[in-house]
Amino acid sequence: VAPHTGPFCSATPDTLRTGTARSMTTVVISESKKIEGLENDYTAYCVKVTSPPSDGGSAQDWTVWRRYRDFDFFRGYLVYAHSEILIPPLPEKKMNFKLAKMTVDPFDPEFVEERRILLEGFLRRLVIHPILYSQPHVVAFLTSDNWRDTLLDEKRQPWTGGTLEARALPSRAVPDQRFIDARRAADGSAEALDELLQAHAKYVTKGQEIGAALKVAAKLLTGLAAQEGASPWISAAATHLDGMAGPSFDRTIDEKTDFVALLQEHASYADSIRAVVRRQQTLQADVEDSKALLAAKQQALAELEDPSLQKGFRRLLGGVRSMSEEEKATKKAAAQEQIAAAEAAVAEKTRVLDTFVQAALHEFDAYKTTKTDDLTGATAAFVLAEKELCLRSLDRWRALRTALLSESSK
View 1 (cartoon, one colour):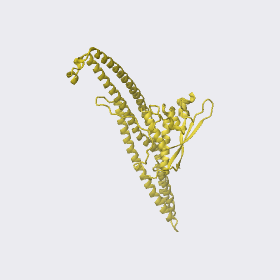
View 2 (spheres, one colour):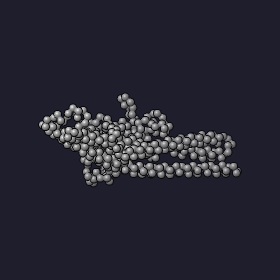
View 3 (tube, rainbow, N blue to C red):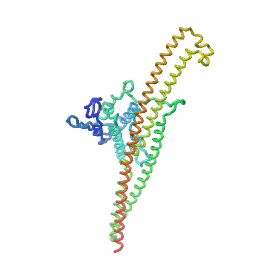
């Protein structure tokens, strides 16, 4: 597949550039496998892309293999090339021991499966984004082995890594409160989600402990029931306890559930929001510096026209007063040219900033809606699943009680 063609880039038929076609494009990571590398082993993930049929044709399919390092490098480029967009986060490179008790083995099946789900979510976010989905480099990453050839810097040279310049606002500048509020909201949301994830991990750990205790009790009763002359109620109790331990284990820490995955994803989105805010501050700093330079040029011209406006050493040394009329005319012409260039620079940088702000604020609004929908749906599904588990456990406890009462009355 050529780098600039694919299932939904601008080189494809018009039908593939519509929002409907974009929503019909599917991306899944169907499997993973361990690869023995020259230096270190790693896990590779199979990315399968299916585009909708066009002009009566059949659907197209692409299959490529990517490792985590590829995802990480590619996301770095997206942050570089689309600084006004909230680039979806990737799962952490290392396991978060605050959220789960997992082994340190990076090839642990649970860890690999959790990462597979989160990487798939990252790709799906790209496919449904109204701007990113049709970018040649996004299409190439999903369909071509030569995807790195499409990563170009601002000079149209191959991008080898690195980030955009980040600058703080000068003290004279007034920060854009909308971006300050967005950053504060993101920080608060991330903190709340992290606390919820840790609470969920504690809840899961307790569920594991209860499930383990029930299994031990069931095993003990099963051994007693096998002894000669044992009461039938012992066997019945063992069966019910073993049944209760089953769902406890099935519904304990399951980092692969949509609920936990979405909590982790949206907690990580805070970094994406901070990156956009830093870029806005850098662009605003560029505008402020351009304005300061323009003001200095205008002040220099004003002093040429009116020597009484000179200040400091220039006034003490004579400055404009010591110049001939010809020298003044030459310097005025040069100053006017510099002012024109500075005005053009201010206008261009202001345009860039305004365009960035408009796009970034749109991203913030769209993300708020997405976040609300995601967390509302996932939380509701999680609560319903836990309710079902509780009801099943209550039913088994009632059945055990009934069995014990029945045996004791004989």
